[in-house]
Image (cartoon, rainbow, N blue to C red; front, side, top):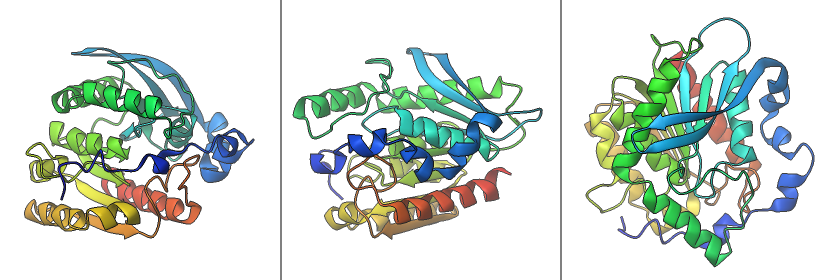
Length: 284
């Protein structure tokens, strides 16, 4: 377990395949339920007041009358962009109220652009954005986002809520569960970055303080660099007497996000199905 696990991830894993993202229907092919979303989901750009300022976010709610469990979806280092909107639509179409916040709102509003993370300047900027989103700040944000969701008539407040994060967003999902232990019942972590480090503020150390079930899908290259991380994660889940699955997938970092250079459809589908099963078992 390295203290430098975040910085150790090679920039090559972040190459945005812009052509695949821009191809008509590419995101819909990756998330089939998104194709149905326009008729069954309401999408709105919203602004949420947090203790640290005004956060831009996207809200997705199932159409029709009723109330549904809430999910907070955290994006990766490249920021809130169309593929995360597609994920939000897909989840909402399956019966969830989904909030996709811009985790980097302290630094800039989400541009929605696809970024080339091979570019050193772009990568440094995004890392600076991440640095401004401190551990305590993310925890405060999570509480504010949940309060916002619970203020909506569409949210089923008597049901537990879930959270899902990719890359750096996985660590935010862990912190969300710790900040809201009586509200968050499930945590999805997909090719997480910096979730189990040697630092005293490592997100995995918060797990015993939560009351959530966990699904963690590690990328094979991340596991090769930090093979002990999966064991550390399994250990804290067991120590907390919580339910959880930690798996190493036969795909590289970024495998679950369409448009990434390492996108692997089979691995992405498997991880997505596991997250949906987790949410179904804990939130519905």
